[in-house]
Image 1 (cartoon, rainbow, N blue to C red):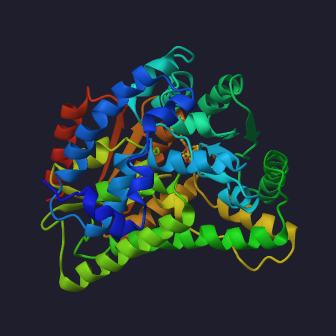
Image 2 (image 1 turned 180 degrees about the vertical axis):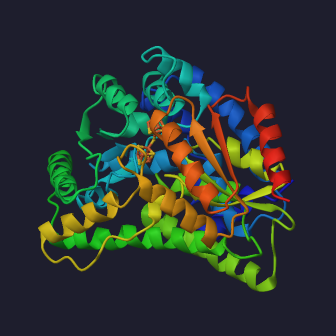
Image 3 (image 1 turned 30 degrees about the horizontal axis):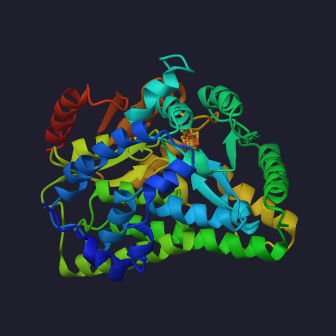
Length: 443
Ligand code: BJ8
């Protein structure tokens, strides 16, 4: 077993353990109107999952302590900060997609927090509102809200949706009956007019955050927050580049956790902690320390893996593989490409933000051939032995794109495995067998 220890955390992270860990989460959850009985059931399974998935890994970097702490108290630590923020008049915005620009929310003095839901626990609750043949991520979103078992869903003053896949669009209509919700109309093509259109949508978002927070987005605070979020992206980029080394200094499972936490942690603290981890990983690389001697290097692409969905990474990394890159929204799509910081006027800055986000290659766009370009580039850069394309069940856009992706990778001589799964463990054994056979085939 690994060496996670609460007592070391305060020194390592600067978090005041007394303030947060010992805080009366139960009271906070009650004040947030949560269903405590049901929430207790969710809390019961988390320590076991952390032990099985994370603590069972050998030779983890010491600086994972911070991320372990955030995870272990995932419904206490950050929510307590957000509760405090709201007590002082602050507004929290819940987001669901990598296209939503955090910059403008922070510029207005708000806080953006991810709301994507990655647990089967929330799926039955979502099925009360949605057809069973809907993507589990969407069902879990509704279950988390309506079952009242996630503090982030209770905390967010306004939800920011987006017109990506059909399932999400229709789910936002249902969520919007229960909570203030603003939907951004994301173009689905990448012509010049679509870039202008996204800038226009960002202007509408600015109006919403200004109205909600009562604060103006100015040239000054927008420029400052463009830089702040760029720093966070740069930290993640640094982390991902370190995984390209022959000596793999960190597991894919640990990196996935970090990418998931990126969506809701304080951006500045998060960047600091990722850079601290990277310092340690650089030393590991210099010392020739690898957590993956003799393992096959795998790039994972496909649908996002919202917290606490660690299923595929865990299966790959307990079957002779190591995940060295994720071309997903809980991976490179989240942080690749910075917002150009040279904009001076409000219009220039907004267009620069729009340009950066329109550079994300999600399967809800047509055509989306640039995603395959990204996968090929990243597979080469990370020296991947093979690519696994993971599709969440009933996600049509990624499912359909899997075929052309496979053809492109085959043409490049990159081994490919396509998998479809959901949030349950029903198929774990079958997936393990297929992943094991794929890894064996890699030689
Ligand atoms: S930018 S991937 S976060 S839309 S919800 S599309 S899995 S059927 S999440 Fe996404 Fe933004 Fe694109 Fe990224 Fe499929 Fe499910 Fe829809 Fe999904």
